[in-house]
Image 1 (cartoon, rainbow, N blue to C red):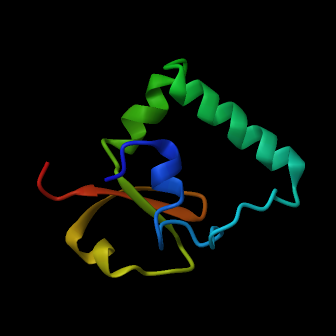
Image 2 (spheres, rainbow, N blue to C red):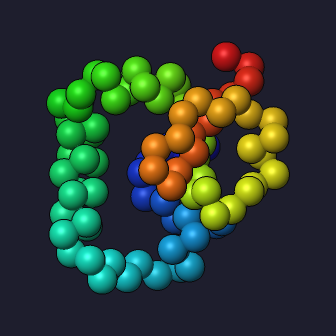
Length: 90
């Protein structure tokens, strides 16, 4: 895994919205909400219940796709249109 957030986000085939360039989202309200959540996580000021809900999830995808790795990981939870998984080695 990359060692930086930028490395993870810009790694090929990690996020469907990233194709080598970053475009600001059309919905600024949701973008600002995402920034707030990221700040909470990066500063360890997030709600522990959310992290407990994710049970060590390391992967996720939208319900509109079915990546091959989802068959070799453990489904943890679905939140809205996203499904979260963790390694089956835990």
